[in-house]
Length: 403
Image 1 (cartoon, rainbow, N blue to C red):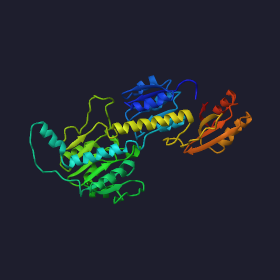
Image 2: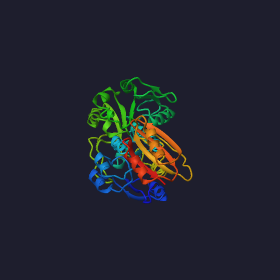
Image 3: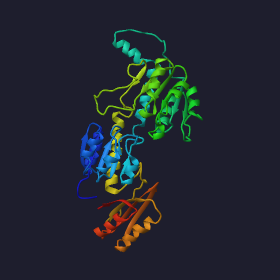
Image 4: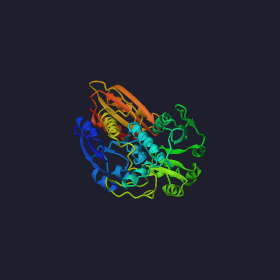
């Protein structure tokens, strides 16, 4: 680590706990409460070492080209599709996220929305605020005994499965990967099998490009008459015009949507959607993980990853690099090298060290796809000439020295 404090840019109202952790580690932190567009980022990132963001700020190749000192990006959320991961990896920039911290918050919102739609609470609430007393059981049901279909059986889908079953629901799930069923949940061989058998369908898929418009006219048409639909995953996976048509026809009895293909950048900006004004449709502003508990936990988790990466080179749970952690040998300096994963690279690196009479006290290597990552603790007798030789190797993507 250099003598200059790493500069950190935190965007989109990241929890203050993150800033406190990074400041206590000696980092220079700037926090901005909204997303920045590409031009704004390009103008700000010239001397930034670490960027923290949520879902609305996009890190593109152009942004990365304007950030020569950037070594780490933190998604203070689950998804990383807002980051050009290939471009970041090519530049030796490590990416972290928070894959587990907001799971419970998303699941609790889904449960609340399922009950609210099943009891048609939004309509009753609106009538009451309009001064209309409509005490009636028409269209209201218990969730007990109904079939919950979960598409995407990952961290969120599995926990929703358990809570749904605890409420007396029968649980079906569909995932493209083989997943172990929890409790009495049953896996389906196809999405269509799930759709035709479920009273409630909820999406919990990831942000991979192949999920673009995963759910459209054909899928809505396959759902049961009077069923409910939820999307708390990604906005671009659903054709919302098709959803509107099926709600207006009465085929779909209600929907809850938390994510949208285009979302306002800041709090108070106008929200535009074809789903506005529909009956028994709950629209929320991407708040699945927006509880104080989840945001504090996310802030603590990703900030801790930033701190450990900058100070020790640790990459545990990195999105794009091997997860390594090596206790540092006292009295040594640590060389952190990201390199192309090609045969003989370690012999080349260690050959340079040997030529300069630098002893290796400890070393740990990991590879992931096209990249390798090696932590090397050496005696302090290295020279700038040796470091320049290591940087100049065709295999080297990035070299950092931690003193």
